[in-house]
Length: 69
Image 1 (cartoon, rainbow, N blue to C red):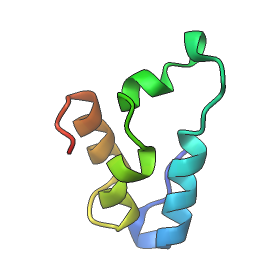
Image 2 (tube, rainbow, N blue to C red):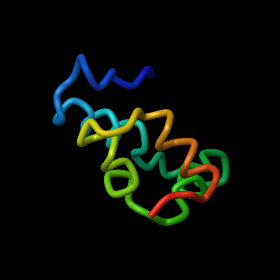
Image 3 (cartoon, rainbow, N blue to C red):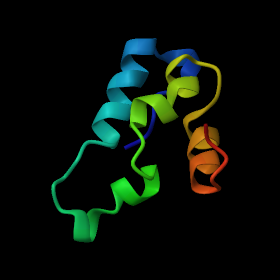
């Protein structure tokens, strides 16, 4: 899935993308999404993307490098 570009999407579309991209698959051993998010809510971590302040990739890189809130 490719995240919607900020300039071509609404806040609601970006929020829907984040929710869908990070939804629980109930298969923790092979999924790993929870480990990436480190127990945090995806909407909270991606708020800057949802609000249109930063790209999805910028936020993702910060999460992976432990530079998130």
